[in-house]
Image (tube, rainbow, N blue to C red; front, side):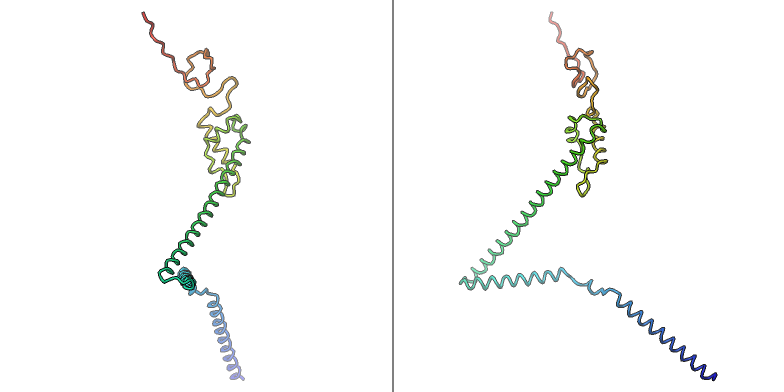
Length: 215
């Protein structure tokens, strides 16, 4: 009985070992199956495209040559006709590309113009907050850098716009609303004691030079 038990235990041990080995082998096979095939990384797609283009070119030349032969052209005339055909084809392709480029440029220009109009329209909402007169806003907008006042989707960035406008106002304080009774920017000292009929408009404070009296 003891001998049979020992044999049974040994067989069980071997069976367990075999089962573990089989499980490891299966896991290894699964891991290998899940690993990407790196051979695909060695494919030169550019080379393949060159081969296709080369074959297409040869086919085109063959078709053209056959066509012109049927027209009764000599070999020299055939070569000249093929070159003329390819030149015309290239010119047409270039013209189409130019039209596409011009259309894209025109569309982009229109989009930028519309975007600037939206920015300028929004700027008028801030006249009170910026303490500027509505009549002054066109000059303020001309001096402001509005290039970064919209996001990639064309939406107006209001905080950025206000910051840009405020910077111009800080640089040119005369753009602010004037106190009642004064107009424009006064530069220099007032030497006229209020007798200037222009009421200080653009008064640069220059003192006139009187000529000497003749004896």
